[in-house]
Length: 166
Image (tube, rainbow, N blue to C red):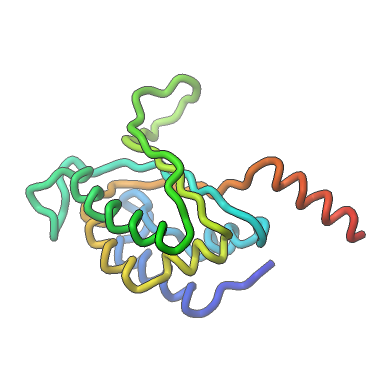
């Protein structure tokens, strides 16, 4: 297992405290969640599945906007930044309905972002400019689930490589 750097741990702890933690709906990872992320394959891309629920009305500094409009300000800046760093937006769209599944949670939008690796994901989102953009994210976002995924083929390949090392 790879350990978190002090800077990464501090960044996520500050982000968690600044957003009020998970009590009102989680929008920042807890340090244990980042540690769990880093247990995944070190090499190869990670696709982050973003499940987003917006506030009806945005908080400061985006008063007068909907939560979705405020988040859109963040998203436009963030996509430009992460793509300049080697990540890519695969897909983004609105949730129309839940066809299979039973949960009290609901989301308005889903987005798929691919990062070159888990370490690159942390480097990219740990950049100070992301904190600048995030004021709009916090103003508009009610709750988020962020799910790290690895392609099945890559998992099978990693498992085969581990077996051959034994």
